[in-house]
Amino acid sequence: MSLADGREYVLNSPRFAIGTDSASNLVIDSEGRGDHHAELWRVSDGDWLVDRSDGDTWVNGRLVQGRVRLRSGDVIRVGREELRYYPGEREAVPSPPTQAAYLAPADSALAWLTVQRGGRRGDRIELRSPVVNVGRGAFNDVVLPDSSVSASHARLALRDGVWSIADLGSVTGTRVDDQLVTGTTAVAPGAILRFGEAVLLFEQPESGARRRSGKVVLEVPLSPKLAEPLQIIGPTPWRRPGRRKRRARLLRGLLLLALLGLAAAAYFLSRG
Image (cartoon, rainbow, N blue to C red):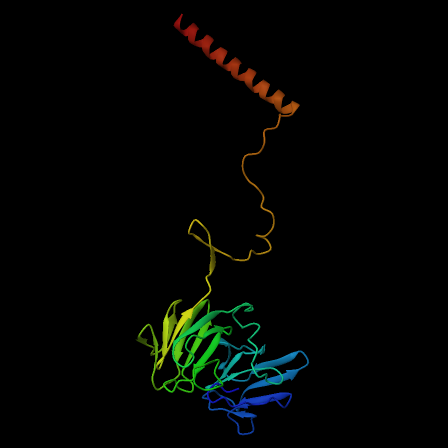
């Protein structure tokens, strides 16, 4: 599905070519070299995206090197064309991606948008994809049915744990806390996002569990080595030394006493 106009393209052949060549299944406008920019392969274990360009094929913001297996909801960028992939027959409500190229599987919401002003006022929208398109068109991930919102208005993206937003050439602009977005702007939890006249509150899950002490304890899974029982290094219980050790200590004590006796005798003789 094209993220620009919502047009759908059906993978009706084992190899679906994307490129500037008119013979391609999907003809795009690209500055990259080569008539065939990328190919979608339909094989028994799923659908794969194969790069045929000079390094301008992306999936979920990650450059494709060679080929990558596609998952439901993945965002593909080939040249200037951006598409969202759905396997098999497209469902009425597309299922969220099970895994992104740079995220662990999202079993719960990655973030939320609560509509404070606009046609969907009061709605709390879950964001389960690392790339979220916002606009008035029905093909967007977040649809805002407001006349002040452009068909393709803005895009939210999550990378390395940080959300950012970019305007997609909208007429009324995109703002973060009343600041106009001109490039890519980071979005912090609690930020107010404005798409035209629509106002939304951005929220994120907490990164840790808060304890009574007020400190935040990060819940980071341990590696297999760190998960093994710890080897305690420190004071050990006192044990009675063996017979050889006791004999050695006794001999050292007697030798020390003999040396002290000789030293004392030499001292008194020197004074006499």
